Length: 468
Ligand code: HEM
Ligand code: MTE
Image (cartoon, rainbow, N blue to C red; front, side, top):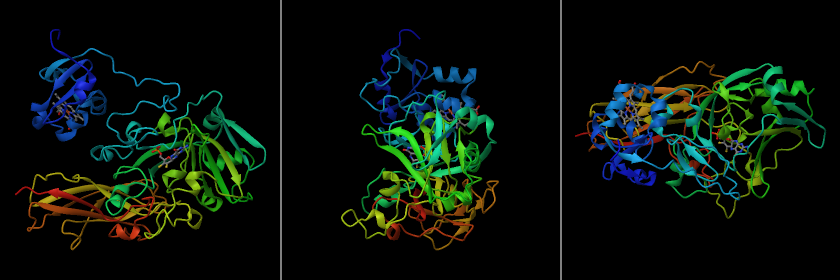
C-alpha cells in the first residue's frame, strides 16, 4: 500500500456525505466507499462510520471480521493515515481532561460536561443497551476514583458515618441483578423546543437506555449498617456523587423515605452494569439505581448515603428536574412551589422508520419503537396511526419478562399499518402507549410545555416520504 497518498484524520472527517464522497478508515487505511453504499447488505448503517473509523462498528457487527471482507474493503482504498489519532491535548487546567473516550456512534448534545445519546438506528438493536452506547448525562467532570481506597459512607445527618469498602459491597452482601431503564427527564425535549424555546439540552428520543444492574440492595446495605429502613426515623434518603465542579459543586439527589421503603428490595447499590464493572461515564465504581424513577436520582460515582429529615439541597434536586404548567416562565418561576420529579410518566417513541426517511412501499409500513412507564407500570398497549390519529392499530408488544406492576425495563413493540390512499408523497406516523394503570400519553405537546423542557411525553409523531 506504499505509494498511495497520505491523509490526516481531519481530511477524512470532511468526507461524510455522498456529495463530498464518503470516506472511512480501518487501521491506517483510508477508503472511499461512496460507490459501495447502495450495495451494502447492512443498508444505511454504513453511514454511521462516515468520516471516521469503522473499527468500533465492525466490533459491533462481527460479521465483517472475515478475510473476504478485508479483501473487499481493500478495493476501495485510496490512501493511508500516517499520524496516530491525536488525543485531545491534556491541559492541566481542563477539568474534563480525565473524561473517558466515548464510542464514535454516540451523538453529543454537549461535550463538556459530556452528554450524548445513541443514534436512533442502534437504540433498539438490543433489549439491554450495550454499555458503550448507553446515553450519557453528566453535569460535571467524570471523577477518577481509586477502587482500593474507595469507601461508601453511610449515616445520619450530623451523625456518625459508617464506611463500606467495595470488597464488602461486592463480596459480603447478597447481590441482586435488576434490568432497569434509565430515562432522563429531558428525553424528547426537542419536541417542546418546537413550540417555544426551553432551557436544557436538545435531546431527541434516545436519552433513554436499559441495562442490568448488579449489587446489594439498599435494604441490605442499610441493614449491614444496623439501620432498619422500615422503622428508621427520617424523611428522605440522600445520595451524593463524587463528581465535583471546579467551584466545589457536587452532584446530589434524594428520594422520600416512603419511596425507598416501597422499592427497598429493588433499589440496587450497583457495581456492575450488564455484567461488567460500571464504566467510568456511568458511575464507576458505584451507582444507586432506583427503578421507575427519573434518571436524575440515579446518582453515579456514589460516595455517600445520608438518612436525613430533609431533601437533598443540591441544585439538581431543588432548582431543576421539577415540573411546571405551561404559563410559568423564567420571570415568574418559583422552584420551591413544585415537587421534585420521582416516578416518570408513560412514554413511547417510534425508532423505525426514522423521521424523514423514504419508505420502500406505498401500501403499508412496519413501525417499531419502545415504550416505558415509571413506577414499575408495565405497558399494556401501544397504538399506531398513519392518518393523523383517525384510526389506530395496536402493536404487538414484546413481553419484557417483568410483572406489569414491577416493570422496570422498557417494552419493544412492532406493528404493520396500511398507508392511506391519499398521501401526497408523505405521511405522519404517530404512536402512543398505555401503561398498566391505564395512563395514556397526551395528544399534543402544547399543554405540557414547561420552561425546563422536562417530561416531554406527548404522542410521538414522525414524517416519512412515501414513494409515488
Ligand atoms: C453486513 C453494518 C461498513 C460490508 C452488514 C450488516 C450490518 C452492517 C448491520 C448486516 C449484518 C447482518 O445482517 O447480520 C455496517 C456498519 C458499517 C459497515 C455499521 C460501518 C460503520 C461496511 C463496509 C463494508 C461492509 C465498509 C465493505 C466495504 C458488508 C458486507 C455485509 C455487511 C459484505 C454482508 C455480510 C454477510 O452477510 O456475510 N454491515 N457495515 N460493511 N457489510 Fe457492513
Ligand atoms: N450522578 C452524578 N453523580 N452526576 C450526574 O451528573 N446525572 C444524572 C444521573 N446521575 C448525574 C448523576 C442524570 S440527570 C441522569 S439522566 C442520569 O444520571 C444519566 O445516567 P447515564 O449517564 O448513565 O445515562
